[in-house]
Length: 238
Image (cartoon, one colour):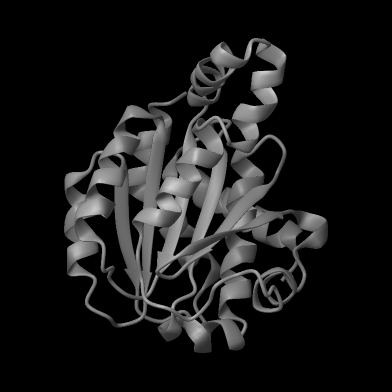
């Protein structure tokens, strides 16, 4: 399906939720642990990335989606955009020898990488703003404040629970200090009750599980990415 049609379907979901997109940054972290191999090879992950990009194109002013993958490690893949999205997963992930693949599952490393990317001194956005603000010792803090004014939507797609529970919960708690929301989307039939329970107690996190992605309706998947809980949260950021 073309990106134009996917964006139109995203607009339908947004209308059903009753929200107007607030300018935001959008990050995608997608599981590349061993149990996800079939989803990658079957093209399901490519389809998910396309729909995440459609969401980003309604929220991000640059219409870009920052993409990470993770197993028990993590890797920043780069930016997905409308004119380069075709075969993105095959080209930028599966054929990328620098991306670690098919390991265990840990959530904290990738969430910490995302935080550093947007809020840390080494982060891309922070680095650009730091140059504008001048002095080295003040650049990081000024950049953090400026970037922190814009909401951050993190979409984390996983098919299994993690091995780093304490560090994960600590990392997620740190995100409360930011205007950041983490939407966890569980896929498949694994028991994700722990992740669901953590998301339930966090004011800036939500959880939804999709048992079957093969043949899933686009609006159902987009509705999971733009959940009712996220819709309420983003409305408060306007």
